[in-house]
Amino acid sequence: MSGDILFLAHRTPYPPDRGDKIRSWNVLKALAKLAPVHVAALCTDPDEQRYAETLRQVSASVTLVPHQGRKLAAMASALVSGGSASVSACASPALAAHVEAMMASGRIGAIYAFSGQMAQYVPTVRSNTRFLMDFVDMDSAKFAAWGEGRGLGALANRFEARRLFAHERTVANRADLSLFVSDAEAALFRQATGLGADRVCALENGIDLERFDPGHDAPALDGQGPHIVFTGQMDYAPNVEAAIHYARNVLPRVRAVLGDARFWIVGRSPVASVFELGALPGVIVTGTVPDPRDHIAGADLIVAPLLLARGIQNKVLEAMAMGKPVLASPAAAEGIDAVADRDFVLADGAEAQAAATLALLADPARRTALGQAARFRMEARYGWDATLAPLGEMLAAGNMQRAAA
Image (tube, rainbow, N blue to C red; front, side):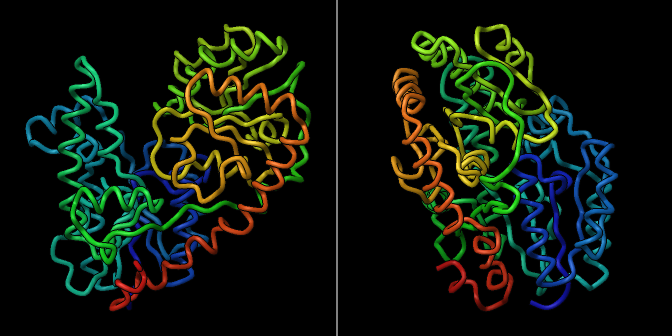
């Protein structure tokens, strides 16, 4: 590859305080070590304009385009066009004009599009410009899962799943390489599209091993314990579903044996159904906290009881890196290269999760051993430098097959 890199993102790639931004920020830093990078991103929160200066410290230029994705308008547009509402929600004439100007400058040798919605800005004719499409997850499969069942919501999700998959397939056929966060996601996409490993492969998430360290000093959590902690963006549907499931179906079984057990739901922007959980015995909904690591460090047990999950869950990597015992559902653990019962514990369903919670809380030595093994696995496998090392070859012309192998 020769020339600069144009980095397109559907959200401001900073601060790294949620799953997609953790990945986009670390990928951006890795790309900046390879060539000058020009950031062009949608800015859905006006306050995020203040992060442009931080982004300029690693980028040749930064353009954050104000954008308010209106869900109803996007759905209406998709119905008329026959396209995907997710893609329509990220349509911005201002960003399209900026990308066109960047491409006309002749400086861009590669385009890295972060999330499938951003492919709409990649020119169909690119001459010698490389195009890496970072889908992260197979989002159409997520909508398909939400579409199982009855009702208008399920019907809308089934429509979106079909239309979004058509978009994903078209984009993947245009891209030089399509990337996913795990081997499992990449394999699922290859199976659905018929594309080979030379066109679709994994670029895994990593973890900041210095920031998420077992030695993090934090005050003890308030009140009696034991303390069970769940972290995440609490307006994100899979996190909402998981929090409600554990609070209503698992915690009562746990408190029937351990009456002082407390379930902490830690994360910003909790929706009304999550706030309501705070009225249940033993449930604490924190909302935004200064540093989620304080709650992870103070936990006796971290739980990730997701019913629906795609790719690699950062919340699980973070807890494991901090040496905490993790109880995860199979969906939350999928894609993480670690060993069940050595590095974390798996349990599916309310009864099994309650039994596993009680067994772990009753065995401090077991929790310590799990935490130590988890940290060791993160050090051996998931540092960002290691997981993003393939980027250089992925960007280099002529090395596609070797990079994807």
